[in-house]
Length: 308
Ligand SMILES: [Zn+2]
Image 1: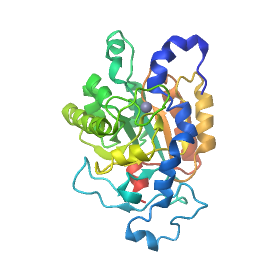
Image 2 (image 1 turned 60 degrees about the vertical axis):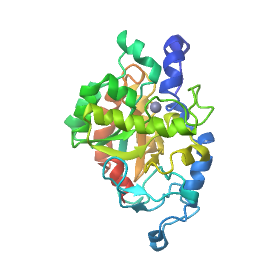
Image 3 (image 1 turned 120 degrees about the vertical axis):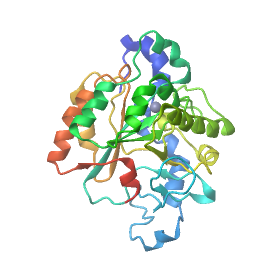
Image 4 (image 1 turned 90 degrees about the horizontal axis):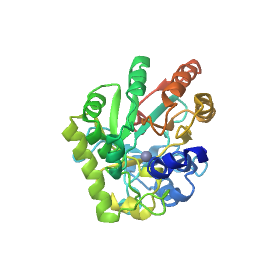
């Protein structure tokens, strides 16, 4: 996406936070080195051996096999086996890439220091988008920041108790887990793990119960150190293979076109659930959903893709 000069004020503050994810998150190049290694190189769990698709160099999106959820960590959902040396595994797109399934994911961004702006009237939520997803019957995964759940506890609870949705973790503070990352302030290793735990605690406090042990790095930025910092937390890191470009977008048709051009069987699409920084997302979704259905796609949560 392009940040217009006119929006410089908004972008200066929001841009760093909301990010990146948006434009930069999409590129994925710089951030995905170690991730790629974890994703591709996972000698992984024993069942991998029996999978014909396992670790083919020609399928970069191939992910380690799913394993049953372990006892710790929030929610019951399939997770991936840890990467080499126990690194947090990274999921990007379903291993099974023949069935026409697609997961729309919505990041509920809010940076730890944005409380005053919310108090001044800026809307980091998007209840209209959530209503539309429900009305259209689109199972979705919301990657929520802990700070967002604190700001909008009623919405966090409503989303987190509605079977249409599952709530995944997008950190508490929306700070960077490796640096540089679009100007976001960085957390060190111990603080990184604590930040993830704090987000899950915020979901619990709000009453969101449909949580899943998936974590999306703010801005998508991660490296081996970040994956190591979260090892043992039980989460699977979830990236994406389709960038919607909805951040600061003004044209819903352009967002829809970009998504429709990018979706493949088993895709994960990154979008945002934050009106002030992604104002046309709901409108884009209204265009995307019927068109993908017409093409034979079925909308699923990330957990269904991880489990197949
Ligand atoms: Zn984000």
